[in-house]
Amino acid sequence: MTNTKEHILSLLEQVSDPEIPVLSILDLGIVRDIVCTSDKDVVITITPTYSGCPAMDAIAFDIKLKLIENGFENVNIIYSLSPAWTTDWMSEEGKKKLQSYGIAPPQNMSSRIEKLLFEEESHIKCPRCHSTNTKLLSQFGSTACKALYQCSNCKEPFDYFKCH
Amino acid sequence: MDSNQQISKSTNLQINQTLHLADTALILGQRNSDWCAHGPILEQDIAITNITLDLIGQARNFYQYAATLINNAENKNETEDSLAYLRNEREFKNFLICELPNGNWAQTILRQFLFSVYQELLFEKLIACNDQQLSAIAAKSIKETKYHVKWSSEWVIRLGDGTEESKTKMEQAIDEIWMYTGEFFIANDYDIIDVTSIKSKWLEKINEIFEEATLSVPENTFMQSGGKNGIHTEYLGFLLSEMQVLQRTYPGANW
Ligand SMILES: [Zn+2]
Image 1 (cartoon, rainbow over the protein chains, first blue to last red):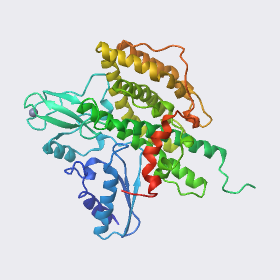
Image 2: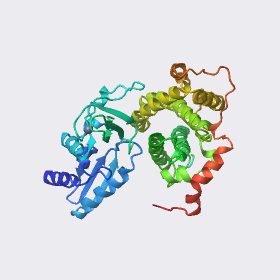
Image 3: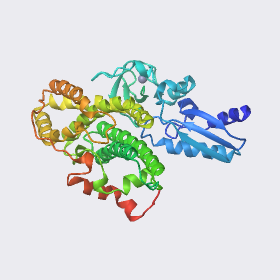
Image 4: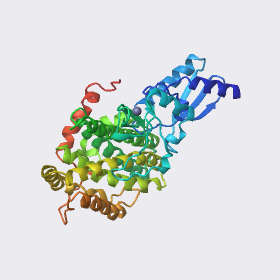
């Protein structure tokens, strides 16, 4: 049974976030529990990143597909809201992957983010030239989980995965 | 002995409470979604659209829970979709402020601000309530709501303390929609928390931001209410007919 669980983990490692394909769902930290009730039956508990994240339905579908392709028969997906997902659960490996993909990874612990008006997380490292001389263009970027920054050194705009 | 179809009073209140939270998030989300591709500049178009996505996501979580409660209590087969798309105007329990037309950018910003400040205070209370699922949804959603409060507060300040024109538009927006905020704090039999208790904190925060925005909080104005009990403005029916037309024309249609 332990082997099965490790096997499932290696399969889940191959399921990626449809919006950020370099990240696996394990890197994202959304897989909360795996329970094998037999060699063919498994219950996977996942937690959504943001309430309205449209990737969640696609992710649940991809998990089912991947496991069924690999011989599982009954794959049950449970959504769990509590405790709420935080970027602190993102793996170090995942943060490195984000950086080389061109998205600045979350740089602080979410609990340490003060949300003062007109104040933004500063010194976000540009994923292209690594300068920390960067500025926020928009609090909301291409998706709810990202903000749009621009590097003042190389002038390149880039997405920053916000602390959450 | 009553038949087991009879729902207990407390379950009924719990269902109505959950539907009120769901409807409120959905209807404001539906309104805001009109800005998609029409925002004043691209970045803010994306911002209001992302806020909308958060609201619709919150609504989905509340509707899913409401469907579970209803199906457990009665022999029914409700889903998040049937609750959103197949209920009539009088069954919706959203605040009136959510169903008002968007008006201009100032009015949209002001509504988001007045609402998000309320929603953050409400979620703080809901996190501590004894309904585990409502508490979990609130704990998840409040992280998003804090961003909405920050974003809309900054815009209220920018516009209020901006140009003569932007200030005038903010003042007109206040005249237009302030009277729909009284309803936030009118207790209803289904309220799981004491909503009257958050009024002073809400007003304090509104005052703080208005002061920085050089705007004034109206005093002793008439307050309109009814939404929480299903009594709506003339706008909701039109909104619903547009939102629900697909499911009503092609029942069960799927992506
Ligand atoms: Zn750079």
